[in-house]
Amino acid sequence: MERDEGRGRVAVVTGGAGGIGQATAQVLAERGWRVVIADIDAQACQDAAAAIGARAAPFDVTDEAATRTAFAEIEADVGPIEALFANAGLIQPGGRPEDSPLAEFDRIMAVNLRGVYVSCVCAGALMVRRGRGGIVITGSVTATRSAPLHAYAPSKAAVVHMAACLAAEWGRAGVRVNAVSPGYVATPPILANIESGKRDLRLIVGGSALGRMVESAEVGRTVAFLLSDDASAITGINLPVDAGWLAGSHLTTYGGVREASGA
Image (cartoon, rainbow, N blue to C red; front, side, top):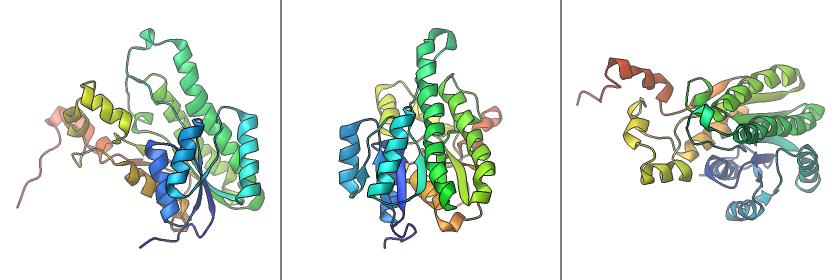
């Protein structure tokens, strides 16, 4: 049975045309939100929105003027924005920092950090004026662990801290801000890397307490919870959704996560 947590309220999902964003948009729609999918890829944005009966709003999150205009148009055409999932971001192949062009660093920071900030401020300003709203930012387990992702990981550490800063700033105005930090999620890019042999599935799941990857919809359900009234007293947190990777990955020095025992 569908839940009516959203009660017809408007939720915007940036980076919503694929992966975690698309899965989250679907979960929110199923739970009664009026969803607007935003993405820089206009055609993919339209297709993803049509698939779930949502609205499409293609724009570039790094463009402040375009973002402000898009949010104003959403409010005029759909209704007041009460939820934002600031999810738009770029991934990065692992490698040595000295081998990575500085242009790649700048591009990732422009989207993953500046773009998230622009989205949050543009939506947050509207929420603050009304005295209500919720924002969830996509972080990563690499925000708190080292990784050969020398632009991506720092960008995610920054937005996790950003969530806490904005939560403290806007809390008295009735706006909650949290972060979710996915672990290894079974999205098309990572599955393609596993299939091609660029990534080893055994190593990915070996450090996970649950012994598996995360599904995109599992992240989506967590985002939906944080945006719902059930989480009305939760703000300023970073919630890992990682199948226990943070809990289990350090156990390699003790022989790894133990297999199940008992019956």
